[in-house]
Image (cartoon, rainbow, N blue to C red; front, side):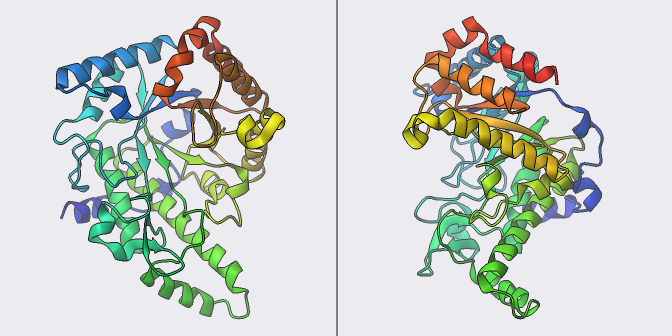
Length: 378
């Protein structure tokens, strides 16, 4: 019932989707944030008081380090919610509400809060969370078996995904949201059965066109519809809220398997921030890794401008990821300096916990403040 109420409440009109409220457009403070895995923030702590103290200490350090935005994961790739959602039934922390604690602590420290949603990831090799109830919403492997990934081409699935984000925006006074995994799975997949029927109708409307080309166009169109729907929904509830997405970069913007046509979303005003992956290391790009990184950010900025994009282009500094990891605090300066040269508008560290071994030196030398000053001068 709550899902239906929220879907009705989210008025999906183009004016709202395009961020008609001017406050979303005039807030140009650089994003200086950190992703937070809550479980690592208070690992081993059992009582609410201990956890709240750990949150307060972390936010104190974020503020003193020059960051301005806390980015806690609120829905997880295992299909659970990290807050007491009324729509997602499985709660990582039971009835305890770490998001409410973070919001209160952030307000006292003049920090913004951007909850992070793992939008379409819902399980790993197998469906989890809502996909156990609605396996018909899942993307499928080439053999037809459902995956742990929601298909964005399914209208019912889109409504449910939108309702989750709308619920949080209605219940919590957040400054923005960051949408992670707002993409298709990066492997050969089949659409869900209902979306396959819709695709066949789409094919019939385009006789003679190549099937692969039509499939790509259809997927991009349907994911763009989800981006539009989310934008309209959350802005209908909280005008002026900022919407960010995580993207691998300019190369996925067209004719890529993940079908994330983010320049179109930027131009339409569906998103305000595009946070580009900065996961470039010697491990995956050799000695030229910083050149690859700078080009990726610069190309994203240029593509956004060429497409008349309205979003700010920021980047995600991956301290430790599956692609590689930084080896010293000086690497932070390397990335920040090149991102500033490429005209990035902000940074989000992935993650706060993995940044800790380097943070004393980062703070002492002032890498974040130097980057903020360069970005702020533009």
